[in-house]
Length: 178
Image (tube, rainbow, N blue to C red; front, side, top):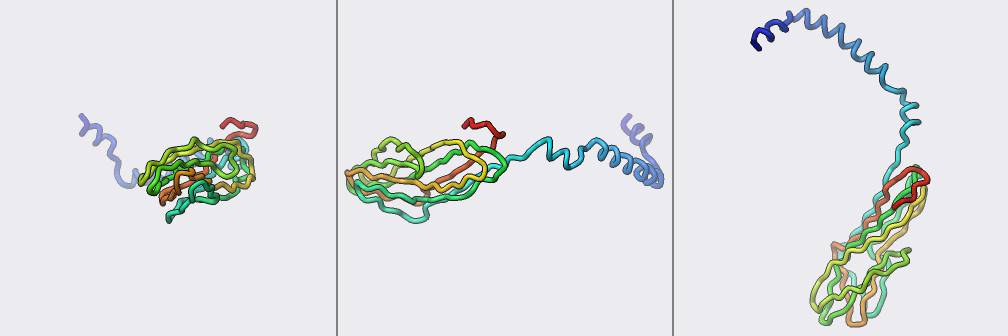
């Protein structure tokens, strides 16, 4: 049965060429008629670009006991003028204690909140995730870094792999949900 159908649909070479020459331009013309003009397309669906900035620590950084160190894994950049943003800053900190147990607190520069003090056992490494969110605005300048405070029990070593990612998800103007 399929062989009969295949033979029925088989055209001589010159007929195929004639059919293609006649059908192809009509198909293209029909497709172009239903597409909106580029200006209309741009006006009806505005584009919102997201932002993403990343920085990682490449060599160990020591924070003395009882001290606070700013400027770890700094990121900076400017958001496009296209939209408002829900901005999220995510840090992952790898902190290593020396011969004595201590604590580690994490904050992001410009942020108002310190994370909970995390106990770092002697001669151990802990990973500390930290996240902060805020609204962002078109053309806003970002300068964010990780701030670490070592407890009075001993110094901390901030290890490679510690990183900061700042991302913004664009939204429609007036939408400040984050």
